[in-house]
Image 1 (spheres, rainbow, N blue to C red):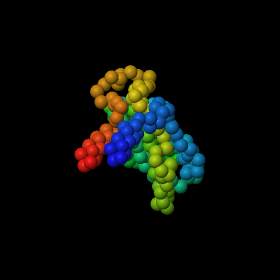
Image 2 (spheres, rainbow, N blue to C red; image 1 turned 90 degrees about the vertical axis):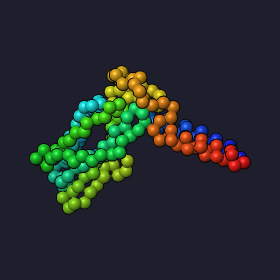
Image 3 (cartoon, rainbow, N blue to C red; image 1 turned 45 degrees about the horizontal axis):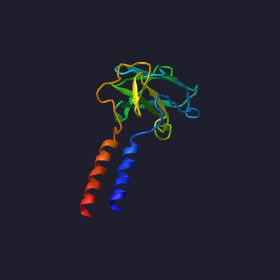
Length: 184
C-alpha cells in the first residue's frame, strides 16, 4: 500500500510541472478604483532590452509614490525573485515612468504595483499575486515554442517534461518511494 501511495505522489509531482496555463497570452488587471487612469507598455518583452512602463493617474489623485514589483520568468520554468523599482514622477504628479532590463531566455515578465498615498497608506494592485503578464518574442512553455522570433529555440536549458520546482520535487518523491519500498 505504501508503495502505491508513494508512486501516486511521484506521478502527481511529475504532472504538476506541466499544464500550468496557456502560453503566449498577455494578462492585465482592471485599474478601476485605485486612482490609475491608464498604463502604457509594449505588448511584448525582448531579452536583453529595456521594458518600459508609464502609469497615468486620475486627476486629483492622492498618490505620492508608485513601486513597480516585477518578476521575470525564463524558458527553463524558473521565475526570478520579484524586484522593486520606484517609478519616477514626470513632474506633473500624474505620470510615473520606469523600466527594467529583461533577462536572457525570458518567457514573460509579470508585475503589480504598490501605491503610496499622501497620508503614507499603501495599496497593492492587485491585492494578491501579479496582475499583468507580458510574454516575450521567443518563449518556451509547456513543451511549446512561441513568439514571432525563433532566436531562442533549441538553446540549452529550454526546459522539458519537468522544469523549475518539479524536478527537485520529483527527485525527492522518488527517493522517498525508494526508502518506503526498502522498509517493507
